[in-house]
Image (cartoon, rainbow, N blue to C red; front, side, top):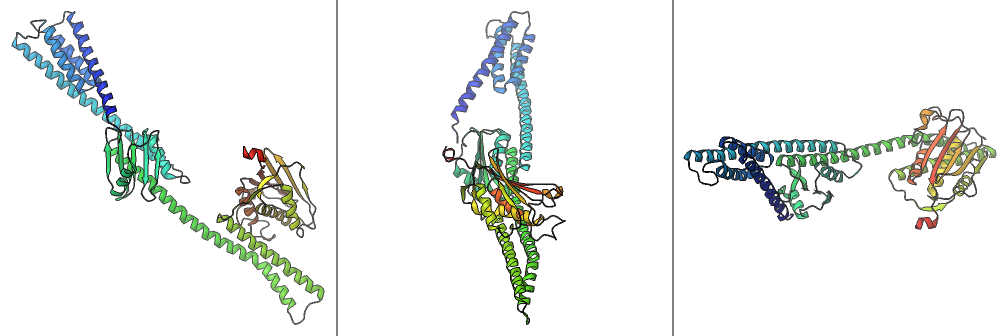
Length: 493
């Protein structure tokens, strides 16, 4: 705990100053009344008022010392024989002691009232701080460390010099405040395991258990504040409520994630089953015709085999999309970043998609000095393949596809534009969602609704942005913005 001697010395010095001030007031009053034609009764009332002022302003100790000084001055200057401490008339002894007793009694009453007023003010301030803390705890962001937020809010609400929270389940310590906490880690652990409480009024340090019900779940240390026992108990209850709320939210999040995972699996299976049905039906019909007792003519056989090959490719694409989406959702994708020209990525994609775009005019419009981007080549090629495949699916056969890339504000923006029917404004904000497809075309164009969701996930993983621009009847443009790769010398700087 902190050294007590420094605050005690300061308190003694302040007390000495207040006593000196009280003596100065009595002396000034004596000097004034001695030069005025006042009788002993008036002087006694004057001293009594001065003593009451001191009791109200400072406290009982100062008022008591002031009372003794006032009695001595009253005796010396106003009770005969004047100028001595001798009392000739026995009645004056009664007056002298009456002044002393009245002064001390009035001082005690005044001090008690003042102390009660201060305590009431302190309780009100504690309630206001506890209310502020309760509101802050209700607004805790569950996406960040709850324990760290709690200690910061306690330090802020109570203007504490140091706050430390010990989590018994993890053994972690969370600190806040402008100073180091005066207690030890062993005391915090002991309070958490045994449910004890330590209080050092000299250093204004508390260490107390944090309980959920009857079970201690941690401990809280707070230094540099003066708190009542009830306020400290309320504070630890609020901290416990904050921790319990965080754990409840975490449990709810896990339950929701599990529910969404089950829902995703169910939706994925339904979507894949639906999309598999058409190519499997085509493959089955083609192989049945090839294996029939009356084999078709050679040219028909070739046509059936081509159908089987195309539909097998389609099934392979669906499986690949599902696998990629599952990997991305599970966070299992590790990007292998390297500087790559966007035009090189686009040319590789078009080469691999030659059969799909063979009947279309596809051109890449990009300046020769276009900066490179730092990307995972395989994943970014997957993104552009999804966008070009989307343009092929949703535009008339033979219509051109325009691809452009430009540098804009430190980014390379790639645009893939088709001449299709366009996208309704209501669908623009939803087309990147998993399994979502426009109402008008969902039954006309094959697909599982995963392509754009995969593209979006890959672009976001690279720190980029992706969006669509479209108007019904005017085609669609899908845009990808990626940060320019810094030159080697800039990267080292």
